[in-house]
Length: 146
Image (cartoon, one colour):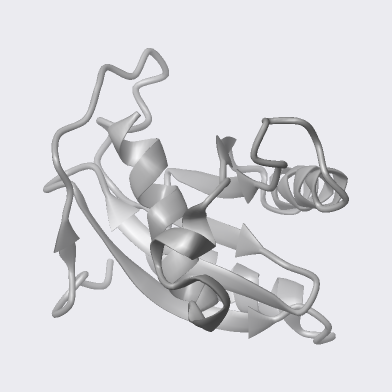
């Protein structure tokens, strides 16, 4: 399994996890789904680390091949997808698309897919100038510490 390497950001603690996934050996891949780009981050509950990994062009014909390559490379125990919502928690235009992406990940790769409320993940890393992989890292960090 590849090392997380330089730029790994430590996380502050994590709560209990009845599924055992957060305490399992191995890594998790986090996804910030968008219609133009998909940000990807990698993290591990062991050592409580997370870092941005890459950005995939969402319109590319090779989206699923890129994701398959990342899953093969990192062998994640779980995939984590940010689910977009309005600030009040109600679904927005992207909610159904994010849910569909999560279902496609589970169906294509047979992995457990966790969903995280991604409200404010882009704002947390700089709003409109944010990098999608950094937003994915925020999403993954939220899941690891929840």
